[in-house]
Image 1: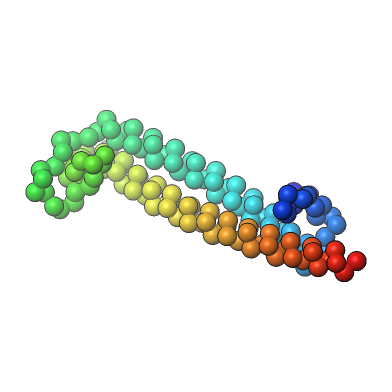
Image 2: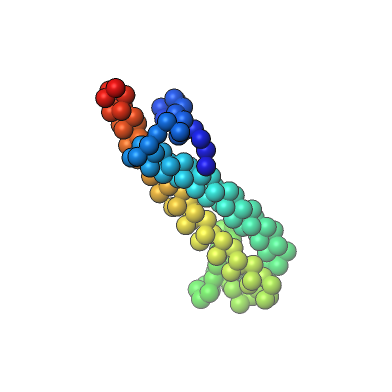
Length: 135
């Protein structure tokens, strides 16, 4: 865990905090580390999506007929019948779908953690201001 937290451009040593201040500072450090981890996981997920896409590009069937409605997927604006993919292609399609769902979830988790970070910073800033005026 970091020994310093930055609030409104000013650094504070965690060693100077105790009680409620320390709890909020620890929460802020935790959420900042969590955002970093989530961003790293998001980068990995995006890399996997690209890799699956490259593999899938080698396994593309002919585009589906315009009137085809059942089990049709869109790739780069073209429709393809899922049944026309070989097993390896289907596997790549499913992997991309799963990775895209994970990407969406990670982006939501980052948004939540970013909101929490903002709230912790605001709360900690207020607690620090109270502490300084009490002296």
